[in-house]
Length: 376
Image 1 (tube, rainbow, N blue to C red):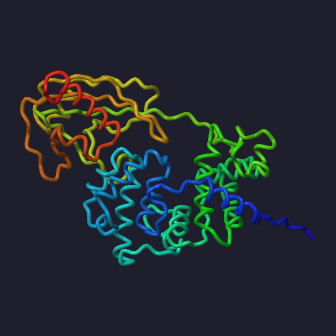
Image 2: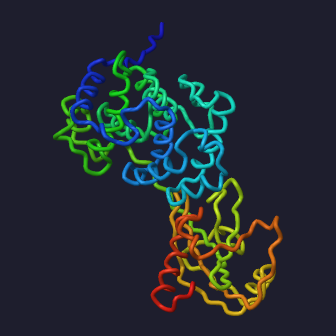
Image 3: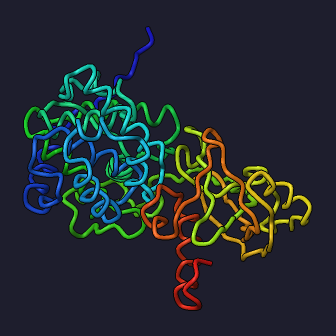
């Protein structure tokens, strides 16, 4: 008869040690802590997805100043939400944030459900985020599994396969469920986050201060630098984009990007052919006739200047932007449904623009102020 080996991940001492450490050495003064307000917890968890605490703090405060309640957020135009999110990146989060607020108002009368399974059905909330929201706002016993947790588990338990691999991730989830404490779920959940963020960091872990050091397989076998196993490297694809910086007096032309995809829902500079695959960072120059034709629906081109290439790195490709600064001798009236708008120079800083586009425009604004008190 074949014997089936059963995984035994239960270890009450792990959670006890972690809770004890968190209560003394963990983080306790972050603005979204010490509250059961699900709106505040949810907002922080969404902002903290793939983003460090230091980058989130300012956005979190400004966002709450503009949208102090869930109903304020749900009632706001999505353009306002995108503007407040501008620069934080991963803009799908902002669109889903707005959709989620509207769903909670419509389906739950503005009160987030406490059940992680129901939370996970809402836009932008996955299994791990749902568990964190439920734990912090309702004290529900649910397991999280983000990058910090994977790193802690990989080192402490000596998991020597890539955490992004399906079988490894599934095993980590089973371990996470088995390790949940019967009490103190808030301190335990926060402890996992704190340990990964402050002690068990990616490049320079503070093993000498870690309460898990005696049981840590990576530390005791000299494999801290090797675990977790890194994702197999792939070449980062290169793409090109030609952007038109059309200027008329103190205004610049912007277009509304589609609601999905890169920079979805944001304003940006008009592009000739979108993001085109390329082999290197050299963007081929565009001839004058092509530029005149592209500009003709907005007005008559007077002057054109190729600006320096700007490179922006996404998670899955590198984009090389070739901006062309174009002044018009005559501007045509835009149709209401064209998806384009002329924006005043003074409004650029607060507009819902992709980070590289906003940076480019603000740099040109700075040059204007230093040189000749003109926009560009």
